[in-house]
Length: 326
Image 1 (cartoon, helix red, strand yellow):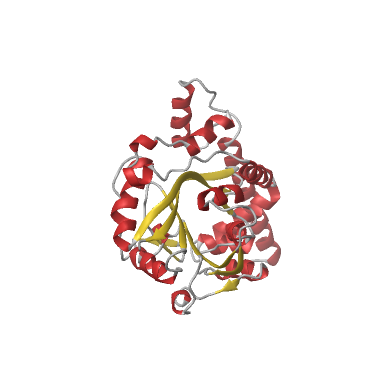
Image 2 (image 1 turned 120 degrees about the vertical axis):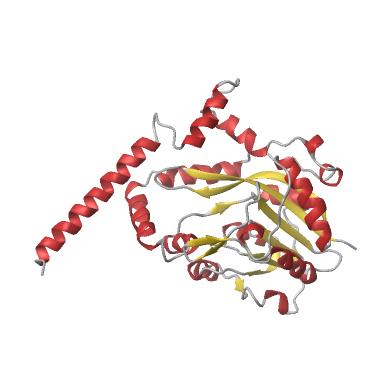
């Protein structure tokens, strides 16, 4: 049997090795080194352009860029051009600051390494209080819905609300805010913010009709996305209800089960290589067929707080405002 002091020494040596490894990785992936082969390829392409690859303004322009002429007729007439605004910049500044909290990031990395084989990434983030998401600012939300700062609706529902950060942006405009979430740690965050939680299998059976339902970056992460859209349509106020839906493009559907990813039972195949082509296909071949038409659409970055390797993560989002067909 190992002596207790020997076990302690082995553990301390392992911990020091782990920390040294992470520090080495951080050095390699920051500073003068590019953080991934894909990022290196993108930056090398940018070098040939007029703007500096290190320019935040250049990167932000790509986040919001759209060629309306490449959109289908229905989406083209409803396109809303978005821009980098103060709320988005504030989120990015907070993310950069948190990424520099070295010992916090080391603890997060160690926790994730141990538990990621058995616990979902969402739940790990919930336990650690990290990984907050940013989809749109309050001003961007108001512009999409064509409402003023003081506008109030009666009831809204946020499906897959996470820690409630984005829910708060929308909930400011509603007297009653309901939410669903699978992850238990994320539910704790929502309860602390006093949102009314509904079960993922019961929200569409309560008899409530909502002025707004949000489905943000959930369509590619659920087992039956078409059934979900049909349930949402039945749960909206018939004439005035709206669905705010965000979808990461290119559209790559997978469902997280524990620490693994599997294909959904109901597969939506979105056609097109460009952002504009995929938006057009969603508008005409997916949403219309389940009874929705596009009232507004914009291109936004889907931002997530980073870690010790990257200040923040960015995915390409299409955000739609959909209304039920009469």
